[in-house]
Image 1 (cartoon, rainbow, N blue to C red):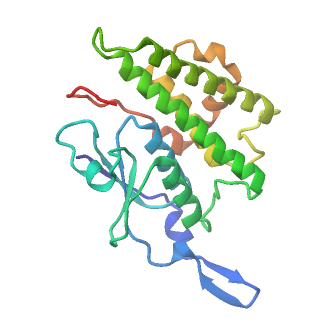
Image 2 (cartoon, rainbow, N blue to C red; image 1 turned 180 degrees about the vertical axis):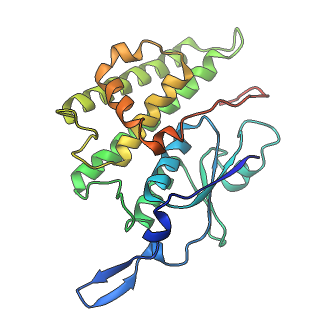
Length: 257
């Protein structure tokens, strides 16, 4: 199992900060307390894990990556730490229980390290709820995309065209909704969905579109959704987006979903 460790240049300084309360009392911020070592179990092409990797890198949180292929028969860590046998999984070295599911891990990162910029939310309740909804939409698109690709790979007589068509409708509907969101929110050459603030929604959109582009099976998407394509192309040039772009692995066994 491949392992890599990441730490941004500013994380050592940001972890020493304290929070000022009512002008007279300094209380150590959550991130400045003794922090357990974090390990993210991932798969190299996973857009779900990529969302978490980008969030950790943007906030300067040190972590280690372990890559695993959850469908292989010799996979051990994924079922050990997540009864659903899905990635990603966030592990701690201090005995606390693992955190799994990309959206839940993202929420953990946002809340647990709220004192370390960027916040990855806007601070406005309604906008932040919308950002979380966009993340849910993106994960739904990705779920449908993965299922559709595996369905296409089934042998003759095993495929369900109706099931496949349903997944394709989800993908198209989701991509259209993202394109409309960009058209509505990103004005005048803006970089983010909401003003000048990078949020979990921006990360989710780029990871979703990046995975579809990486798979290379929907080559028409850029022409179909030009605003979305331009938006993602701009954000994907950020260092923490570039360094987490997907890499394919080799599947040795038949996939059952």
